[in-house]
Image (cartoon, rainbow, N blue to C red; front, side, top):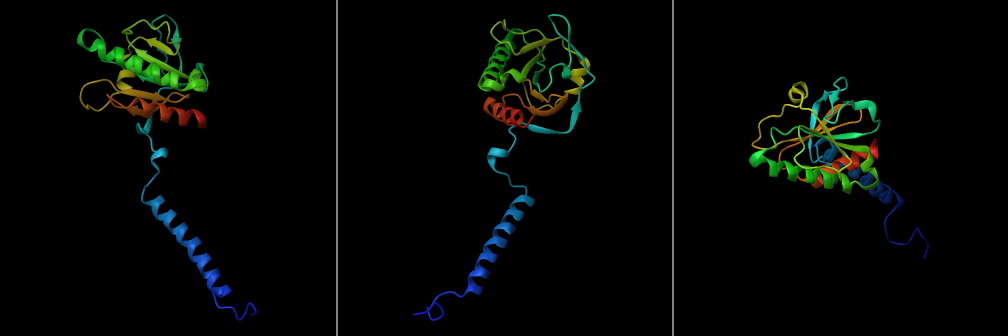
Length: 190
């Protein structure tokens, strides 16, 4: 039996099938892309700000003395917290938030050296074992720049890129794993 006499698909049918599969997969990818669908692993856990808040010319004063500038540490991301108050009943919440941010920092592993936690105001606990924490004096201009919409009690956390732009916001009670995954992804890129 020769190839021509063997029953089956003709080369033209096979070519059309390959073409249909190729164009069909491209069409499906286009529909998913333009419908806004993204894989869960690529979605931000925090709220991406648009437009970004520009803090490049805003120098902060460290509580230990000196000035904290955004561009003094190149390639360094900042996690900024501006709690309303950390005394009395709220002290326990502030301690919990600071300990959570320390865990996020430690889970970044070798990349942790490229992240600072900037805490505005008095620290609720001693931070000798937390090298990433930079305590700054509360600043009305910074507080105004980071004004958040009221979403209930608590303090939001802000993520600032190495150049001094506020790029993401995490509401009070955020999932620390989400902050860590967003930060880990950003540290790989920049």
